[in-house]
Length: 274
Image 1: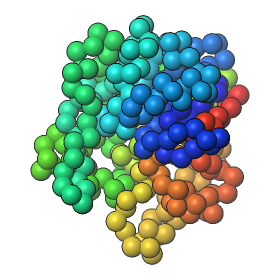
Image 2 (image 1 turned 60 degrees about the horizontal axis):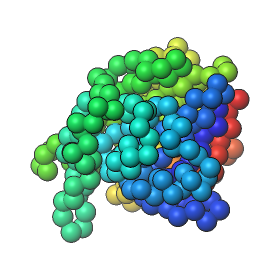
Image 3 (image 1 turned 45 degrees about the vertical axis):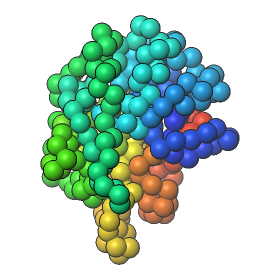
């Protein structure tokens, strides 16, 4: 499969960026899958520049109900008239972010939830197409990102539990590829849950890890990232590709600890998995 970053916070080759994520998967059997849609119609412009035909997408998956992953949903539905969009049944609940100037709504456009193209799911795991498995409801004992403390919903006085978050497992040519949008439930917990579902660890993980905006001091942040790197490296045959909310500085720390086992995927870059 070939995975292309259409939207990401950083750019390769001069493509415009936004704070968000959208990945396109081209399978060896010719199927096209969209994972997340960025925050705007920049999705359409970047896809065209990259030669990705959004009208050819056979299926779309939304990782969770934040605007930087689902804000481009309306634009996608306008150019693609047949692909189902798979999301958790909680995705359209309100979501908020606490910023310096107060609380901001960061959820989806509620008017889109009546689209007949949207397929709502419970936590699963469930097969949505041959070789594609969705799962949510991740718990686990590993720490969740500290940045979650700034995120609220469905009420402004309630910390978000991320009941809407779902992850995608893709099987092809002997590979097990795990995709996670922001890993609000904790990337370690998500990888462990995928391992439990599949009976073996994923061969590849593509995920934002939400390490930015941790609020930790430098020493505590370094300790947290060291612990995270050690755990990710304990899966000896897993290759990691990170992006988006991981943060560029935090990726640099991970890279020093994990070496070639982790790379950063910028807008316009591709990952080939065979």
